Image 1 (cartoon, each protein chain N blue to C red):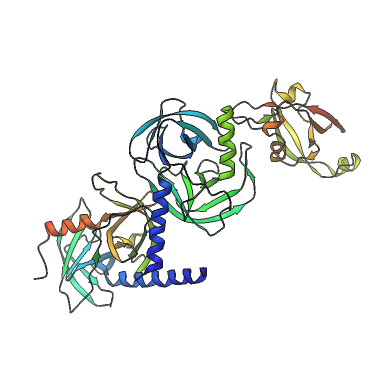
Image 2 (spheres, chains in turn orange, cyan):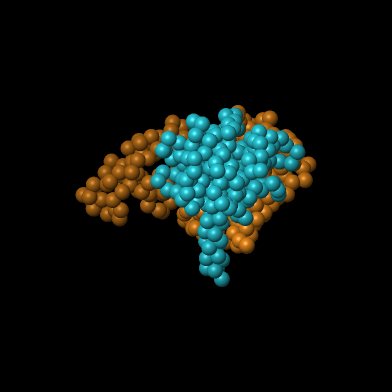
Length: 304
Length: 195
């Protein structure tokens, strides 16, 4: 009698079955479909990188039927997309938002790359604080997985052994390495995409490169740190250009905070900063200058 | 009580593996270990066709006894081969799971002989299962990492019931011939071996 082993097996299969009822196949690219999760009634969350068209998107429901969906919005920076599904009686995913997953916790990744649900299992290999994607979005916590990626992995849910959703899986945010976008981030992005259709992010239109400020200059200007950001590109007609930022300026501080890499700049460019003045402190011609810059709303697929 | 659950799990897993090893054989052709086989019935071993290229092979049972065997049936499309040998005394044969149908997420155990290891075990879950009313799939797909020496060996559930014969890895997934398909093939193509 192997009771514990068989119970574990049954519970895993139960978890897959119950959570799988909210997982759909998304047909929005050639060849293999990707996955999506009914996150709220009538609202399907999927991954941006697996949706290659904005129209003629369909989903295959767990009962095998196909239904049309409309794209409510997408956010390349978190690799999430939101689709609207009307008139279907599909269960909504049970979210686990009270306690974050722990390193070593048994997890299952679900997908539906066709009519049937698929699963791979493993453990949480890393759980960490907030991190920033290369396109500048803040993800509430870093969730890295030790499990295999299969067709349909992206857009599927990561579930715990009780079938509760811990986030949306994607291989599109960290160079093919599987990561999970946690529930809190998905909630935030879904709310904003449903309201506005896009994720507002402020942008300045600059490219930067970290540089070491010579010690003598740092002493002369009474600077605290020795690393700052050299402005290596200024987008013509962009917000920074309009506000007088020049190529070759060395950015020390933005909005009162020292900047040591592009992430520090992005941290100051949340959606609420659009149209609000930020103080920029720069070295120009051997002198420290402070002036105001006003970010505008970032056009799609621009970084900073 | 968490520690006792994990402890019980480890103990039961080891017991399940030990039971499966008894129904698993090594297959050798021309002196070389070529894979694993399932002790399907007294005097009958099922393995992959690609494990036994010639007409003759040697099988080695769990207890270390070796026996000459001959290939009595081969199906290249299903990658199956049936080997007959002279059974010596009573022996364990595999328990085949007919029902219930496999569920996605269910735990599965594979036994094989990768590299120099004999009777190695791998644990995984069912990755995909057939849907009701759908044509039976040609392969069971399992999320379990297998090496070449697992070919021809059993894929079993936690109760020790054989659900498939491990055949290959494809795209990170283990593919196994469903036990029901093997059983049908044995019934259809293989005359009863034990009188």
